Image (cartoon, rainbow, N blue to C red):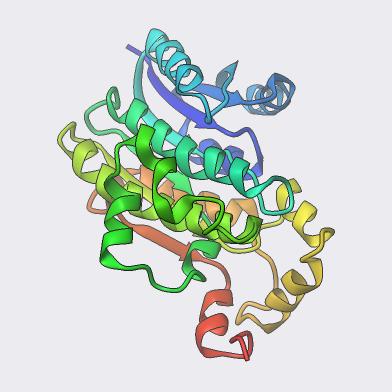
Length: 275
């Protein structure tokens, strides 16, 4: 039976990880826009990978479940790379919470039901989740363990509490890492692992939207004042993704890997600290 790697979100980061972990496996590449998935599939096919494509809207459980059925029809799902999402410059707080927070919880639950023994998942979160002030233990537990269909009903996520798209994004990405920690317990019962990567500014089309958007000057300042002094590349995220999905990462699950060139360190303890 063929091993299947599912990539949700056909962007640069998902592609960078899948290239590192999918030789000899079947790649199912899913995106909300089929033309994006097809374009990425052509590049991967030309590089020798076996690829098929699908559409998926992660904010719809029915759509995610249909993707699960398509994946299991191809073989056993040994890997899931969840890299779909919207950024603060692209969407309203309501949409960000529905796609980035609820959508990730649905993906983790649906694929956690069928992930193969020995399988692994990676969810792309964000350094934004590390810039949110600490939540209470009760809030952490609520984001991690509230039944998925009740998640968006949490009082802390109502639009009178979520102040703007950036706040919604930070909450969503903090929620992603907490939800992955909780799901790692359930995935572990199937012999599988799951982790988050929280990248900083990685040069992708989404990052370019941010750099040219209303927060662009702030993003450039982050890069200048970070220890690395630059943005990251999708291939650097791919290296961490390959570790987490491969045999070298067999002892790692329920963890979050912050890789931001030192931006978060500078935010809490350096020149980027709020005055």
